Image (cartoon, rainbow, N blue to C red; front, side):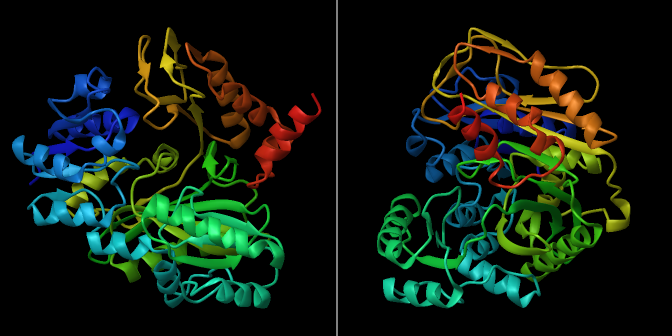
Length: 443
């Protein structure tokens, strides 16, 4: 049994995990930097422990400090949250070797799916459609030119160990390959300490659709439907919704079946997501996110399943306790990410409330935003019987938001929500550029 959990994260996700622990009667310890000493997660937890100074490299990425903190506070498990060390296989292995439960997939699973080449190989064997591309990692520039020539341009080079748009370059013709290859390798080494690259056909303006899953590591796997995450700015998601609009039932079912098959092939344990690119009538595997995702509340609202609670119960060895027949996906949910555009002190904060509105945030008036951390301030999530109703509720919710003291992306989010493309469900990864960039260009 897990009686005490160290939360190795910050912000709204740390607070979310603290609340889940309270619901389960489990003690919580928040590991925090000096900058985060006065945050809500620290205040609400049963205990807290400082693991270093403000910069992430001196605190939230210090694996040894985190494990030592867990041992000193006599925790049974570590929840890595989202980002930071949540998908770090070496950290998960250290946790396991310390005799603690890692609330997430096994370390060898994280290592496997963390490499895009290896993940594509497993997906192919499981019968999951993959984007046309090289079968193995690129050997050198000549290898990249050869594969691109056979696929046809445009192509995309990706860091095998990458994510979040880092180590990624689109190549539109042969002349641009040498520079793109060099830049992608440089970024891959800089951000992931791994220069391995692979190459795929570049799908222009696809939809980005992902399937949420839970698995107990013993063959039981369920999916909680899909989320459309196509509205993005520089590969960072802005809106996420479930069910995905304008998606055929046949494709919806095929994506879910493919995702379940992949997780069974992996022997996966915990919560995770399979991400796909949708190009017209076809969909292609992109990657596995071996962790909880920022947009997990959307799936919680349409399924009625508490994903953080499920993570903890799976780590306790309880198994899923659910079959696919027990999952009833109903209604519609939409999440809007409110991001800061700079650092500073919040002089006034007002978040929306009322029927059908949920807000996940760590903010309050007087909160200090540090330049050391992610820009996410709050997630406004709404639920409704239909998409039209959900859009109306989100409009009302965003109109209630007040955040003074720093610039935010609220203006852009309101523009996207009001746009004809978004309203009619014609969402692709190019929507942000069409709505925001074109509007700026036309005054």
